Amino acid sequence: MNAKTGRSALVVEGGGMRGMFTAGVLHAFGGEGFDPFDLYIGVSAGACNLTSHLAGQNDRNYDININYSTTPDFINLRRFLLGGHLMDIDWLWEISMKEYPIDLERLFTRLEKEKKEFIVVATSVESGRAMYLAPGINTIENYTKVSSSVPLFYRNVLEVDSEKATDGGVADSIPVIEAYNRGATDITVLRTRPSDYVKKKSRLSFLYPLFFRKHRVLARALADRPLSYMKAVEFMKNPPAGIRINEIAPPKDLKVKRATRDPETLKRAYRIGIEYGKRFIEKYNSGT
Image 1 (cartoon, rainbow, N blue to C red):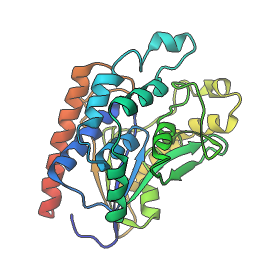
Image 2 (cartoon, rainbow, N blue to C red):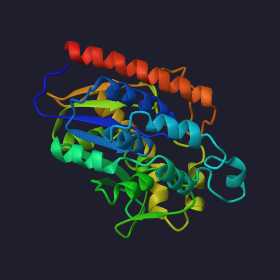
Image 3 (tube, rainbow, N blue to C red):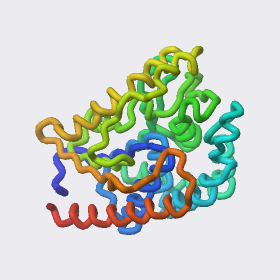
């Protein structure tokens, strides 16, 4: 498994609070000093988890999710029904960056010294296409926030270089094809859905044109999301010749949803992620 003929990539799916599983996997990687990757691509919560991981802050994702993300200041159904955010990422980013800032100097020194590439995925509101953003020390906070700004659940529209942008999962939930296009031949994908998950058309998709009257292209991209999602899954199942894809996916009985707030459910997801991460390291290092 550890033979390399090209670049090695780590791709991390988003999914809101389902990202506790991938945070656990990354905790295992960091704790074991396991890092055979040249390229990292993260989407939404996956991008946030990767940011802390690459900065060497192994407990940051857990602490933020348990201490901040489970509170009604962040996820609040009543506020949402009254026209506000279901997920107030403005509040979450402000408090987490203030009370638990990312070690940006360490992160970018590491990337430069080890010649590694980090990409954050967002979606252009104007074109509906994926934006593959290479963050710098002055842009990473904005890029990860944009990548995590789930349409509808978060009411504001953010920008990247004067272009309106939103959640990367809209256009490319699992950017495994992008990793391949960037020369990766050995790709490890951290999922937040079980391996056999099939993404179907949302029952609310008929409302997208109403919800996004000012952003028709985005409404179409949201409606087409199952197609792009399953295209990535199919690529993982049947990669091109010479491409090796490893997948770490949660078990079916891991009942974590995008907006889960129960600490014990989230802690269990994290523990299972750590367990799965350690198993993968052993398998990888044994060459099987």
